[in-house]
Amino acid sequence: MMVAGVRGIGMTSARTRDRLMQRLKEQGIRNPAVLNAIRSAPRHLFVDEALASRAYEDTALPIGLGQTISQPFIVARMTEALLEDGVPEKVLEVGTGCGYQTLILARLVPQVFTVERLAALQQRARRTLNDLKIRNVRFKHADGNWGWPQHAPYDGILVTAAPEEVPATLREQLAVGGRMVIPVGGAGGQDLLLVTRTDGRNYTRKSLDRVSFVPLLEGTE
Ligand code: SAH
Image (cartoon, rainbow, N blue to C red; front, side):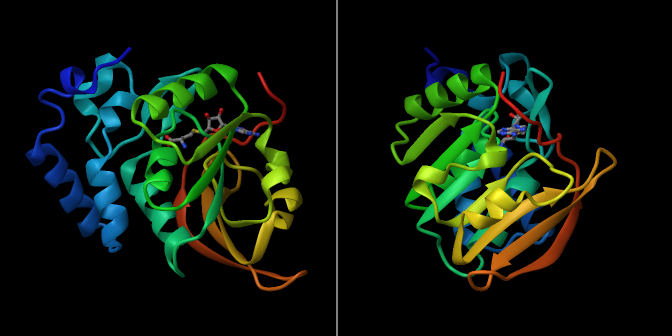
């Protein structure tokens, strides 16, 4: 088991984290609750020990199995967009990965449902969040292209891997008024979209940024 206090020495210093906060603010992150959630999240617990000294740099880092932990700025940007109209009660996250974005969501919204297609990552994320005493997250090992229909509709959906198009199944699991933040496009880079469900049939979409995510794949491993 990891002991947060021990592994954290030197890497959780107030100065290191203040520097990250400063950078996020300079890049335009405004929501104080989001900034605070990132400030208090022990990101070093989500990366390999060999990379822990870089955990509070504003960069993506490898987490094994060809996947990455998202850059703090992107996590902040996506979370801020999801919360812009108020705090959603129920949020679905597709692409748990190491669980860092999951932790940020868990500290800001009442209920989080998170789906990951790689069993090994899913289990590790579950353990890490359990060690952090996070109790408002439910995990599922599944292909997130299908969402998690049993708990739909969701007030928010956050997708952290990129499909070529917004999956219709995910859109349909949004509540009316619900918001989805999702990177859409190919390997060369994607548009980060905010998709809002305006009524039973209609959605609006707005482009927020250019981003670079791993692809949303099919099936489970
Ligand atoms: N949210 C993570 C970053 C995840 S990287 C963080 O906080 O750092 C993207 C993740 O999406 C990877 O773990 C990948 O395995 C997963 N993924 C890709 N396609 C998926 C799918 N169809 N369903 C669920 N997860 C998927």
